[in-house]
Structures are given as structure tokens and as C-alpha cells.
Image (cartoon, rainbow, N blue to C red; front, top):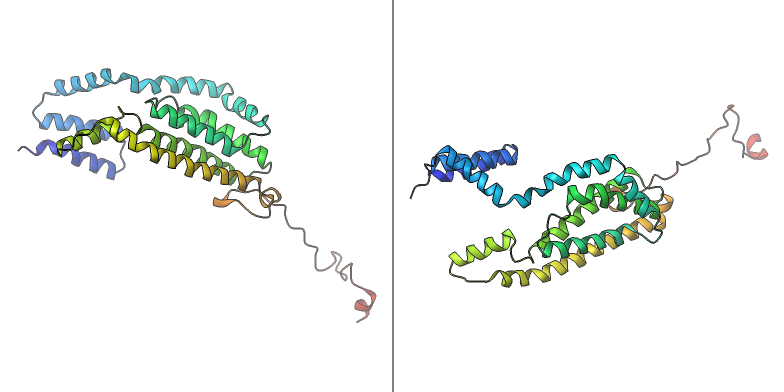
Length: 264
């Protein structure tokens, strides 16, 4: 067996270890693998073009990014914050739980690109969650804002990761089906998808509980008065302590000293 084409794997490992651009590393590894396997350079490039054309729906996100940037320039985030800020019953937990449910349902149907960190979290979900947090805790500090943004990003990851495995035509499901078939275990994609449903439900319940706990920490009296901070460093700036000076500014005795104390 000819093992030289496997050098492409070594290129990928070395490139990732050196923290080079992942897209550049994978491209160089693929070209090197094709050339080492004896394929002409034009044939390798033609294979890249065919793969891009067959999977061009994956690159729709590159068309959406300029549109999202233009909307942000004209106040998309501000309008999202204003919308949520006017809803008195809106909380960070309720908002993110609803988004996680939407993300899991759409991902389970294969619609993984309809939402994401760039498409929805940064321009819409994170500003809306931040506005809801300000309603719950008007004196929210910078650490608290970053914590809310982190929860918004984590919610998208949880919804996508545990939702997409329910879709029978997702890459991970097909990879497992092919691997098991080579090992003599024949399974239909639906068999694996069904077993992904309990884990998706558990992920929704666990992360939903974390979001409700976030609501509780933001609405706690200690967080509102500045007597404490929320978990993870997010809290409010408490008022500066006002201690009376030990001595009068003019150098005399303290103003609350009694006559007896002055004479002693």
C-alpha cells in the first residue's frame, strides 16, 4: 500500500499546531495529497471547483455577512435593544430559552445556517439579551455585560450542537453510518438520529436551568444594591463607602466627642 498520500494528515497536524490559518492549512494539505497521489495540478484544482459548485449552498453565509454589516451600520443593534427594553416582562433567561428552542428545532431539520454567531447572535440576540439584563439590573457593569453576551453565544452553540444530530442527513450522522458499515454494523441514519433526541432534550433542560439561574442572579437584591456580585464576576458597581474621618479636618477633636472626653 502506498502511504505517501497520508502526508496530507501530517500537514494538517503541523499547521494546526503552529496555529496557522485553518482554511489555508486544509487547502495546502489537499493539494499536496492530490499531487503526491500522482494527480495533475489542474485535476486537483478542478476537484476543488466541483466540490465548491456541488456544495455552494454552504457559502450563502458569505453573501449574508455584508448585508448584516450594512444593517448594523444603520442601527440594527440599537433597534433590537429598544424593542426588548420596552418589554417589562422580558428577561435574559426567557429570551435565550426561546432562542435555544428555535435553534434546536431548525437545526434538527437541517437548517443550520439560518442562525449562528455571525448571523443572529452578534447583531440581534446578544444586544437583546443585554437590554433585558439592563431592565433586570439597571446598574449592570462591564463584567455583567460580558457574561450575558457569553451566555448568548453559548446558547447558540448548545442549540446547534445537540439539534443538528437529529437531522438524518447531517455530516456527522453519515460519517458514523459509513464507519459502522465498514465494521460490519449496518444501521440506518434514522436509527442514530432517534438516539440523539434524548441528549438534545437533556441539553435543553440543563442549559435552560442555567439560564433561569442567570435570571435569578440578575434579579437578586444583593445584585441590585451592589452588596455582592453575580457568579462569574458579573455584577454591579456598589456605591463607594463613606467613612467619617477620624479627626476633624481643622486638626481639632472629632465633632462627636463629648465634653468629658475633651477634658480627659
